[in-house]
Amino acid sequence: MKKTLAIILMLMPLLANAISVKIDTQKRYQKMEYFTASDAWSTQYIGDYWADKFKEKIAQLLFSQKFDEYGNPEGIGLSLWRVNLGGGTLEGDESQIDLPYRAARSYLAPSSTSYDWSRCKGLEYFMQKAREYGCNQFLLFSNSPLVQWTKNGKGYSSNMNTNIAPENIGKFADYLADCTKHFLEKGYDIKYVSPINEPQMTWTRSTQEGSPWANSDIKKMFVELDRALSERKLDSVKMLAGECIRLETTFSDLSKRLTKIWETSGLDKSEFPSNFLENFFSPKSKFYIGDLKHLAKQIGAHSYHSHIKNKEMKSIREQMKIEAEKYGVDFHQTEWCQLGSYSDYRKLDGFTHKYNPDSMNDMQTALNMAKLIYADIVFANSKSWGYWVATEIKFGLCALIHTAPHSDSVKKGGTIVPTKLLWALGNYSFFIRPNYQRVSLEGADSLDSVMASAYLSPDENKLVVVCVNMNESLQSLNFSLPTQFANAKINAYTTDERRDLAKFVEEQKSDKIRLLPRSITTIVFEK
Picture 1: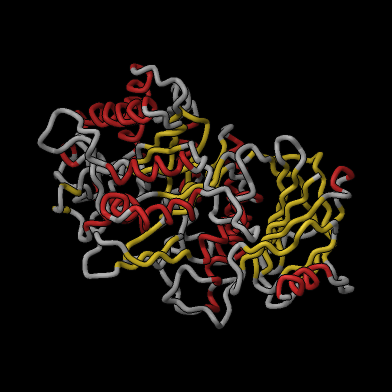
Picture 2: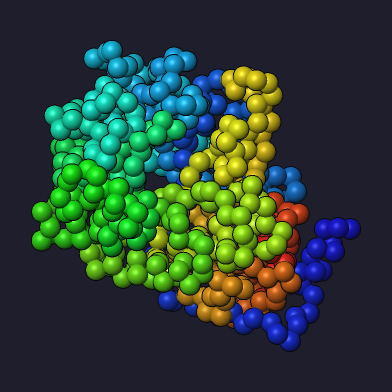
């Protein structure tokens, strides 16, 4: 009965103020490459210690592309897995990082000169599970050079300077290339290697691995990694540049706060890691790396700090698109989470008085994320979208999957709770598969109210539309569909306060859809 009522609700006659939406599949934009999340750091720790019954459930939630017996997706079908190659801050049970499950192992022990490929079992467990579920694209990224090669012997920095001795950059490049070759030989499709993550940050606290990077060292790192990949004949592997902490850092100077911090480094201002597009992709720049064989013509950046106000969200991304196109570079949004709480909901566009500032994985945040994904893809033309952490232990507020240990030991397994963030990401990742192409959708583009984006499958038999309703009321959409989808079969899947990517419509032929209040709905039209 409940199921029937839901279908009736979605298809009941439209109100007079229905939003008219026109889709034109002849107007085409970027082809989507992937949706991803990162295994750092707790996911690897869980892979090391937790029982298979816990790990298998996590893998299913992250990677499954199947529907359950009721027609609901049983997971979110990630199409790429972002794998952290750790700096070696975890050795046995000894950790340089305050919480051991936020540290990371390496394949080369600090006291050894030879690789031990059995050292990172937890990392490889989830890589194997991803592949079993059909996610066989991987990006390898690093937060810190290996501790034996850093200036201070730590996986975090002591000051605002690159935390690796210049003579060790080549060794680090060889290590990353050797790890890449190892995984390729095991049958993993390594698409990208990202050797530097958020080089603008201070990274001087022992809460996680990280290192600042000056521009000269960034260039040397990519030159050396290009050499190392070429020497091993890893022709299919590309390097991803950037991983900037903010989108603005790719086309402008550092913020005033970060500029003051970098001024303590004693470096010339030209060495500050900003204006990435111009510094590294302009042939006129002394830091130019755009001619390296293995460098992808892409810039990776993170959407942190630009998701508070809708006006800012749109303008920054429109500028990002203009600047990236100027240098012939594709944009990839590789990492985001809410990153800290904001106590006053009135300062956050799209949040209501029901917002709990102590929670960063509820429906309020999920709606904000869905809006952000829309903005990154539609305004900035991003070809992929990545969430930060798949899981966290205890620090689960911003993870896709919250895990709470059953005992005082974080090694013995625990409760697994998929969050609203997981299912909201699934509204995109489960249905928009690699090489789906974004097409024109007009009529629903308000970050304050209703927004929607449309994607065409490579065989042109499926049209996927993801709608975000920020309103606290039902909203009606009246679709003007392309001729080939006029009589399409339609299914819809909704995430809201009560539903988790739940199937809402069964094999109905209709161009009229209702969006539930404060919801994310994916509509699949199939010829």
